[in-house]
Length: 405
Image 1 (cartoon, rainbow, N blue to C red):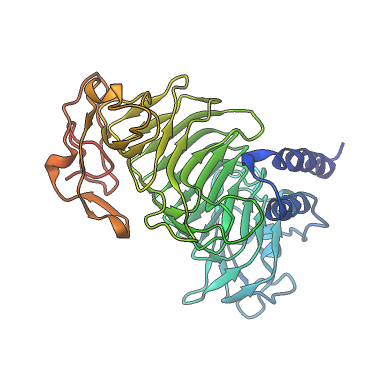
Image 2 (cartoon, rainbow, N blue to C red):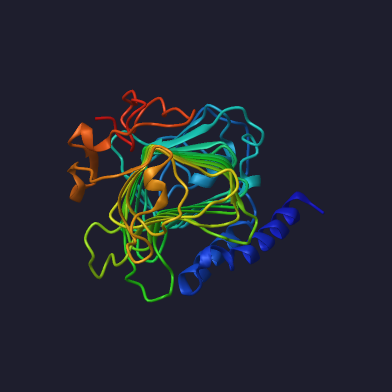
């Protein structure tokens, strides 16, 4: 079987799995699934030609010169790119863009990335964007619909981008998403990681995802399923209709070695038709193994947590815990489900305590403690604190949450 036919067959299998993942069904998922399937069945790739160190691209670019005077389209520039190449984007609205794995011949197996960035002062905007091309670093762009990183997009880095009205769907390995903003989506996740391995989500802001489309899909800030070696660190998540962070069953392949540390995670800060309910975190998926949740601040919505193999839940601030037997250590619980118990048993052991935490500006998402005493604990056990908080400050051993006083 040719490499192209293998890609198509793999895409069909991935698309079939996608129909059943994350507990979602309906119109938008069908649309997203179709887009992913179509992208993995590419047409004739652009002519590769020799690799070049710099290319210039425009929304209406043509030909293969890829110069500032004669810009080309993005797929042509990627076909010519190698590690170290810079692809500069002119401003404007780009058409639906699909980059295939075999459309980047010089980047396959590369030990470094090509960079896609705006021309100085330019503001390139993409609607639907899908990439299966490896070793690309994207920076400075805006995406307004959905952005897929499909299985061929190994080594992709998303750095300092804006996704406004859409979501990013990671379906590949060795992917980094950092220093970016995701906002204003409707019935769509801000960041969704599925069928992926070795993914870092760090330093992002994900907020204001509503449920205004009547298509039975829920909106989460971040959702993870069927993936392994995923780290979610130093992010600010808030005002997403369903949850700030959720782990889901997907196709039942499990979630293995997920690390969640030093995040501010809020549900719906104010209940409105746009954000109704909104757990801060849903971490009760029983297929998870080696889930490590350390040094986070959860507020404005419940945390749902169950015991799973290898679970570590340490030095977190929990605004509301939904179950009385949730396993945790060295954490502060503000409120709990009093219909289930008078006081959770964990409050009086393992370094946990009950108490009210005062934040600098909870309504705006600033969950830094106003009073150092409200976040101090008497730690027990051998597990120490994280070395740094969300802001890079040294984290004291006797402090819970994502921010040092």
